[in-house]
Length: 343
Image: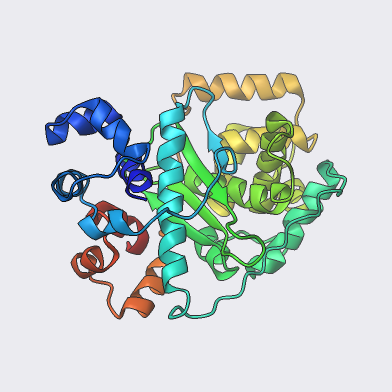
């Protein structure tokens, strides 16, 4: 269905129907009609392909893989727009299609992460234990710092992709297509500091293992809290936090722990509160100190940004090349989408 792919292409770029119509010299109702199922001329498809940088044949492939509205789990700010949600959804949908197209030629990489059942009683102690158990699936020690979380997650069979296009209010999203046979996907916004990237990745992994079998109608605020607790526990387990963070807790202490475990100072303040290492009043004091020092925008202690490799390796192995220009022609996706997958 051409209309579904036209909608996808403009959504991927964050354009409205009016934006695309203006670019190709047509009316907004004309774009709307195509997206509703009206046949598009070859000339119209060619014009849309040129502007969106998708190949003309991409629009003739039929519907993209299904990814129902509301099925993605997000880490985003409360002010994120619906249009931004749709852009992230577009990134994930086209990655699902590529991986599905190439699965017969791709190397077999088993999926080691295991979601909890829908009737599991989830509380703080369960999440702490689950995070340690998840470290086994990732191939890392139960209480050690994780040098490269992205590679560890990919070794567990989860596909990690980035979004080079600026989606300002989004940090990440996750989805498990065709569960349990499909390959889970985590999409992260590029250009974030390394500590924020790691926390977002751990957060989305938390959604995959905690909420895969939960209804999308469940309390979203509770699921977000659970995913954050899991993320912090994955990056610095309770036993390690208690060993390395001794009261009275100072920002200097937390900066040292950040350098070891790759988790932000602000997240460590929340972690200390959750584990009873500081009081609510002490947390407020530390947060005020962080704000006064301008650390809400940029913290001290550099954490390297990690680069995904799994999807790029799958594509290169299956297509016999990792050359972006050749992959652009072979996969029919915009060059920026190719870079997100292979670089």
